[in-house]
Length: 154
Image (cartoon, rainbow, N blue to C red):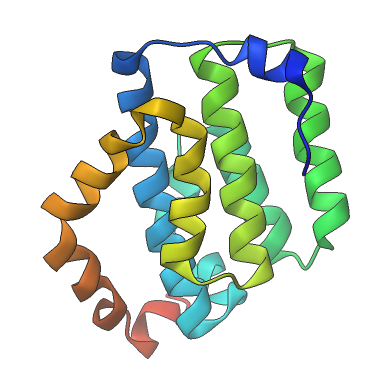
């Protein structure tokens, strides 16, 4: 999606605020790996989705599990953030969540998806790169961490 310059003015936030986005990006990476390996429906059986505090992320993941088309998913989620007139770190978190959800829905390569949304950190992208490097072994292991049993309903 192409975002307006007005929107980027509303995204202004500090480096320490942007640190909060690193965990969102890591979560998107985990969900993306799982969905790519086992399919979108696998996310439905992930009990973590029910516990996600971020209502936008929870709604977005539910929309893709329900088979909502990408354009409608984007419309629903962007309407929620524009109607709320949020700005700063809350807007940045929302945009990262939306773009991550859509990347998962499109079946984008998980690492590529994470790198694309990390670009929203701007000059502070090194926050994500540091996290990725410090967790590189964990991230590599994520690709082997999901088994068929993870996707079965209880």
